[in-house]
Image (cartoon, rainbow, N blue to C red; front, side, top):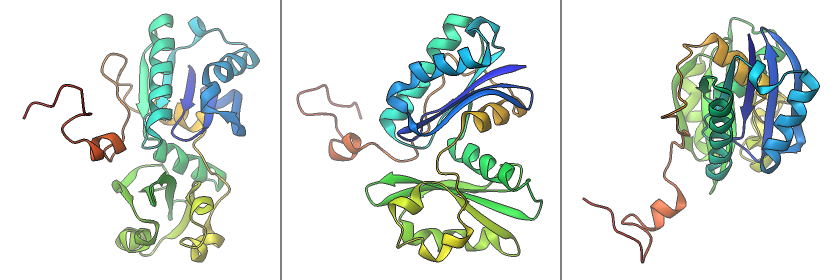
Length: 234
């Protein structure tokens, strides 16, 4: 099964075409910008030798993450899936990042993987997962200094590994965890595709939406709607 996986939860996109467990082509890293998502997808598909109509499904990281970037990713994934007549599957971007980290270490059974992405506004998005990227507890948005206390009951008796760009955004808050922090900073398209293919294959083409976790800045500033626009009905 050939799956196009993409993630745009951060400013750095992850894109890949995966056939079974094998990545045919991938783009990931500092030079892969979410703002150039369509160009990157075209390049990855060409390198994989796979046309959109030859794909079996599209898989998208639904967040949490940057509001604008997530909307770009979801809209792009829907457009490709609709045009190609393929299903669209969605997975957690944090789970995909944890999956990347687990694959890096060979998915040790006793390990716990904590994915932590910069949420800006002095906060992080965080989730805790087992070696299969199964969520333990709930994904949260919280202050960097609150991550340790939140995780304590989930990690007792386990080897713990961290991944994500939050350590670059808040180095002092996560200094004590630096030795357990893996190189994976943002979710890969490979992990998105693998998680989606292993999942329930729910097609979200018509009703899929990003997972934001917290309200947008506009919603916080203008709970009754933007001034001059129609107010919300109560």
